[in-house]
Length: 414
Image (cartoon, rainbow, N blue to C red; front, side, top):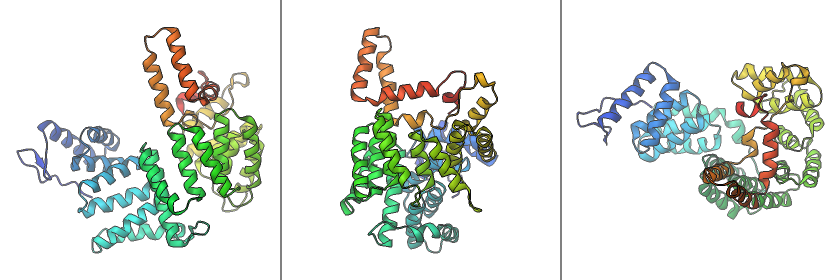
């Protein structure tokens, strides 16, 4: 989608939107950055303008385009969706939105939006490119299925689940809950929807609610690996060691049933079952066409190092760096390996963001701000109130202290 810069008038009107001279000047600077392909600078400047002028279509357009160029896919999608809302009759905006959805990995949402574009603007010159993008997604489209659900409804469900997940990632928990409630009204026991709802509750800071929802998911499907993995995570955060062992044993039992390897690996990592992680890694990496993603190799490397297979771990971290030279987890772990034996701190894979939900981070920050300048007794009372509402904080703090060794720099780099 092109930015039309020819509709400027002395009154400061561009594309029908009144702008101050200062805003026009800022836009001109961003346009110049984009023309010179200074994308990082353009993306930062455009996003700052977006925060101030979220209803200005030119600002939103610049923010979306520059974000896409720097592969900030999630924000590009947010801005592109807003652009469609500002001008739903603009085919370029809708087409750009389809591409941002595909880039962000929201394939089924992208297909849903593509169908709307095909219906409204079948002769648009960019429609061919969208058809090609949809064609590349055919394997996923053709194979998606849920138990006792026909294919067309499965496609609808996948789009809704992607929509709920992105709303949750954006912090729009109410919207995410509304989408999941719509699914559960049609399919009350669908594990995928229950797992999504469990994650929403967790991100909201309602970990006990998450436990109850995940238990409903395994009541529906006792071998659901996502629910079992989530229950391991919640049990770790709540300090319930017996439950961790119980769900870890159940997760090991479904390893050979075709579950997504990353789900199994992550659940067993939370349970600190490093030998089991290595076993799964050996299974999924032994085939001729085996190809692990960065997250799977990151987990496997941690398990290999933790069980004494240092050189194998080093090779996986180095592979990740070759794919992404800014991989903070690989950099920190390789730096630790380079130290003398007595100065090493051990590997890590889970970072602070894995231990603290967004809402809990906000509550912790607010507690710190509220206690600023108060007496020691008042600070203790404030934290005790937080601990009463969020008992998992004690376990989380212990984990973070282990992670955040000042000399290793692991927490700051993650």
